[in-house]
Structure formats: C-alpha cells, structure tokens
Length: 112
Image (cartoon, rainbow, N blue to C red; front, side, top):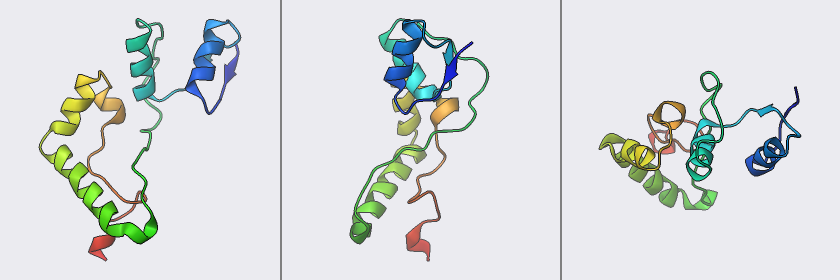
C-alpha cells in the first residue's frame, strides 16, 4: 500500500486514479466537494483527524476590516446561515463547521 502526503489534493487524487497511490489523508470538506464533482469516487474512512482551518486575509494595519469580517462571520454562524451554506454545498457540517470566528486562531483582539 502506498500512502502519500502532498500539499495538493488534486495531485493526490490524480495519483490515486492512476494507481500510483492507494490512499491519502484529506480534509473532509475538500473530499466532500470532490465527491460531488466526481460522482462519489472516494470513500471516507473513520472520523476527521482535525478540523481544517481556513480564513480570510487582511493586512495587520487594517484590524478594523478584520474585526468587521469576524463579526460578519459570527453573525452567519449565530443565525444558522453558515451551516445552511455548508449543507447547500454538501460539505460535512461535522467535519468542517466552526463554533465561532477568530483572528489568528486566538482571542478577539478587541477584547484586550
């Protein structure tokens, strides 16, 4: 069995189709998306090892924009829109949903 790590899910999935790789570790959200576009070609085994972190980038000197983005995302989470969007795009809520937004994966800078 060949198991590899790559920074590109596209490369890994191509290598699996070519028979060069037998399995890989991917994030649940990206695998959900690939299964939508490729007719459920892949099977998930087990539960996620971790929840992937993603985000919106802004310059440090524009913290006001960062806080506005964080507050907007917190609003989408609070009113249920965030989960609705995950479900609309068939992305696993259990694998990817977050409970609150953060800046640099830490406490809210406005609280300090």
